[in-house]
Image (cartoon, rainbow, N blue to C red; front, side, top):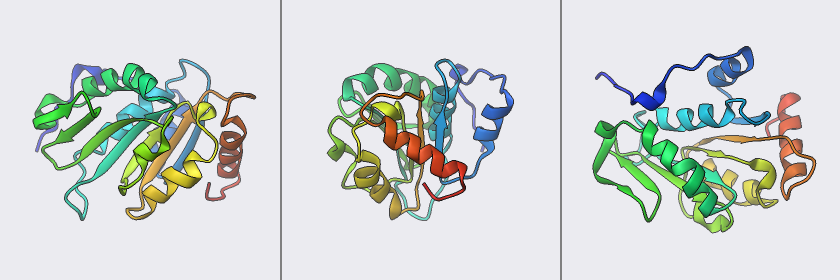
Length: 185
């Protein structure tokens, strides 16, 4: 099967760190990089490129999360809809109210706001992205996201601008530092 992508997949000119990040097979990745570094674009593409991948179960589930639902709807939702090729989308597969895209492959992509962490609970995720990690509520990853990734050995990118302040800044820094030492974050 040929997988034609949308124009939103314009070629990127990877610099060495972006290329290394894109090729990484790590289950959990922390990307702390400045504004306009490409981390968000790479993570959006990563989550979308998993949508056609077949699993041992019929309903692979992926998410892209930001600190609030309003921010997720404004920042991630339009860009992700442009990245998902229309011929991948199941009939009536885009839900503007739920911020979800269901594909004919059986996979589904959700855009979440973690201002209410319960939005990520109750399902087993195959993978996802936590964007603006320094601004996430402390404990959200360890108490909500990581357990939901366990059943399916899901992956997760935690990305954001490195900050000294912010509700989750210290937690994100510790996660990133554990990754540098080779520990399982």
